[in-house]
Structure formats: C-alpha cells, structure tokens
Image (cartoon, rainbow, N blue to C red; front, side, top):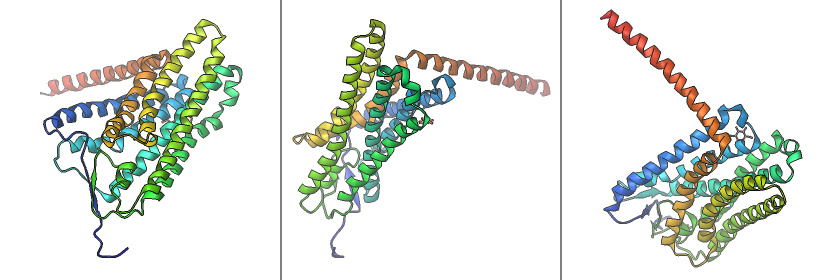
Length: 326
Ligand SMILES: *[C@@H]1O[C@H](CO)[C@@H](O)[C@H](O)[C@H]1NC(C)=O
C-alpha cells in the first residue's frame, strides 16, 4: 500500500432517518425502548438467579438469552440514540470494525442459543423421563458455551475478509451502525468475491440455525399431537412464543444477508428488528406468559417491599431521632 494514498479514518453514519424534525421524537422513543430492554432483561436474570426453583436448564438458558439480548441491544443502540442529537454522525474506523465484530458475535450467539433452547424443549417434551440425566450440568454449560464459540468463529471469519480492504474515499454508511454489506460496498476495490463470501458465511449460519429450529419444532409438534389436550396446549403456548421470536429474529437477518435484491434502506429498518425488537420481545414473551416466572417475580417483589419497609422504619427512627435532637 503506498504511503500517499488517502485512507479513510472515519465513517459517516446517515442514521435511521434524515428528517430533522423526527430526531427528538426518535430520541425519546428509542431511549424508552432501550431502557425497557435493559430493565426487562436484567429483571429476568435477577429473577432466575435469585430463585432456586428456577435453577433448571430451561431458565438458565433463558437468563443467558437475556444476557445476549442485552449485548445485542447495547453495541449500537446507545450510540444511535446519542446520534439523534447530533447532526454530523461519525464513527472512527476502529469503532466501526468493533461494531462489525459485535453484531456478528452477538447475533450469531443469539441464533445458536435459540437452537440450544429448542433442543432443551425437545428433550423436555419428547424424552421427559430422561430429561434430568440428559440435561445435566455439563450439557447445560455446553449449551451455553457453544453459542459464544460459534459466534466468535463466525465473526472472526467475517472480519478476516474485511479488515484488509482498502478504504480510500467514500465513507457514507447508510445505517445507524456499521455492518458488513454497507461497509464492504465502500472499499476501493471490486468486492464481489468478498461480498459473496460474507453472504455465504452469514447465510450458512442463519439458514442452518433456522433449519435446525424448524426441524426441532416440527418433531416436538408431531410428538405432542398424540398426547392429551392439556399437554398439547402447554406445548403449543411454549412453541408459539419460541416461534414468534425465531421469525422476528431470523426473518430480517436472512432477508438482509441472503436475499440478493434487498435495498439498503430497507435493511436499516430491518436491522431495528433484530437489534431492538427481539431483545424487547424476549422478556415479554417468556415472562408475562409464564406462571413460574410470574410467581418468582412476585416473590422477588415482596422481598424488596419488605426491604423497603425495613428501610422506611429505619428512616422514621432516624428522622424522629433528629427531631428529638432538635
Ligand atoms: C447461563 O447458564 C449457566 C450454565 O447453565 C449458568 O450457570 C449461568 O448462571 C447462566 N447465566 C446467567 C446470566 O443466568
């Protein structure tokens, strides 16, 4: 690479919307959405870790999904929210690479942990008598670690294609974070092969996880079809929840990476789905409809209420003590 060639040191993000009037409104909406993502998912993690009745593989996986959701929602959203307030939205070259690394690490992990959760449900529903022996502590840890490893292999292989691309001029990224199809488009060489490799890599991961999910849900549905209507109803409500998440998460990912005709401005709206809507939906879907989870949460609440009462009593004592001193 010659020394006098100008190199891009920062990218300009065009953001979600170019309308100036919309910016304060979007700032408010997305701040609230992000806050509820953090609250909802931290609440799930807190509930699962603090209640020993929820120390089962299903809830451990759920808490781990919540953790990944927080990561998925946090690598780009805070910057996007802050960017609503500034006109010139820039991001350094290195930060851009970090965002690319994060989106593929976290989204990859999320895809695979959904497969882990489907496997857990498959064992619970189709092999109920062997559930405890199959899903032992070791298997549980493997089901949590494999998503992170697969995500890491996926994201480093993607970055390997990109990190050495020459960027010499154009630096407008038409989205609210850096992602591969948009950034490779800006390179100063023909990126046809690189784009193809990226589509193959992301496409392979999302399509194969998706197929695994479809297969496991189909097997579960076929298994419960011949059972009592009560177990069928229970399984169906669990599965509807899982399938909603899967469609909302995989739909946009597969569309962006695999569908060759998608326009880039559609892509950034779709990116909102998997960076914001899915992380918000998981707490809603998995907690509001789940009796055990609701019971654990009200127990948690009464515990904190008691703590609150104790502190109120203490405050009263201190306060009246003050008054006596006066
Ligand atoms: C994730 O799963 C592991 C293994 O089951 C568990 O020990 C851990 O507490 C879980 N993490 C969270 C954040 O709940």
